[in-house]
Length: 196
Image 1: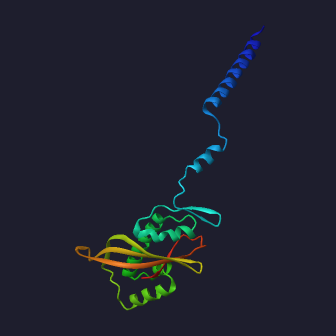
Image 2: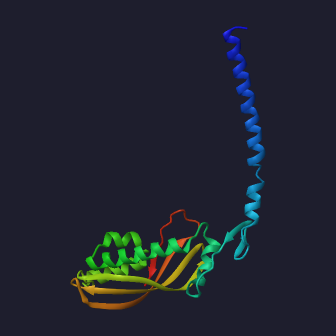
Image 3: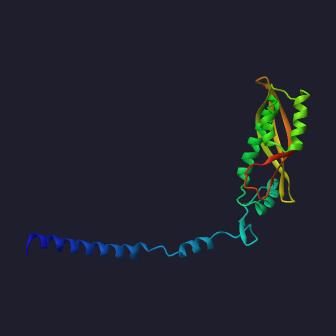
């Protein structure tokens, strides 16, 4: 028996050990069969699940002030009220700041035409105040969610604090009710301000 025969014999032994270890590992660890996914899906709680056109929609538990948002979950695929609130706050701040400095271009992108005309008129009549600044902003309540004619509108009550001339001693608390709308089927995630 030559040296080459020993190498071949060693390879066969190592291959046999490897195959044995693979079978043992599969036996101990198991293998994915697809059953695990079904099992996980079966464990999802069925509370607040709405069946709509053969789709299941998971509606989270909402605080009493935001319960109207269930309607949005039912009609908008992938709706998330936390993302919506973040976007609404950013829109509020952007619109207030744009109005204060008379930035019509920014307002045109964030408002429906009818609402933009009102803001534009106020700017033209010098009813805006470039010295006004936003200090804090919170969403107090969702007043109403309306679904009609392929559109959804969400009316929000904002509580804001604003001050002038970088002087925090001039802080004034404001309560504003704004309505944002969008087409239900639109892939564009942006909502437009439709009324204040």
